[in-house]
Length: 122
Image 1 (cartoon, rainbow, N blue to C red):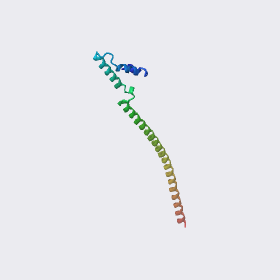
Image 2 (cartoon, rainbow, N blue to C red):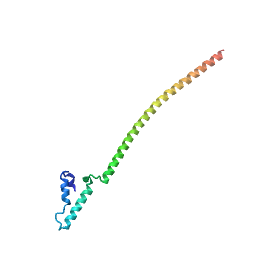
Image 3 (cartoon, rainbow, N blue to C red):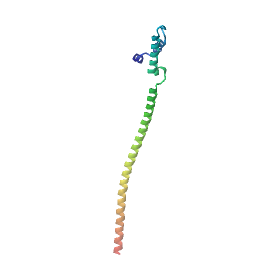
Image 4 (cartoon, rainbow, N blue to C red):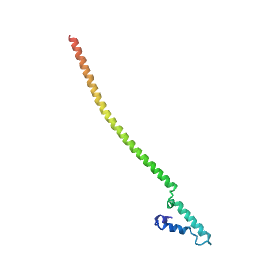
């Protein structure tokens, strides 16, 4: 069946027509052989009749699902990167707020100390 793969699509119908004809009706083996060959060709090359094979349908379905999964993965990767960036920004902001909090606590302690000194001196 390998020659049919490289055959010109224009001549293929003629060859298939010849395979379907009975040239010698007296010899039963020829008719059976030709029918069997025709059956094997159509079975092994279902695309000849523009009817997709089961394997081709399955492959196409898998390729579509793969494309959807790949797009979903890209979307999730982008979302994950965005979350990482927001986390890093949050950590920077948290560090800054902790420093401000320490400064405010220090200022409060200084004010309390100054108030005590004023109360003690009076």
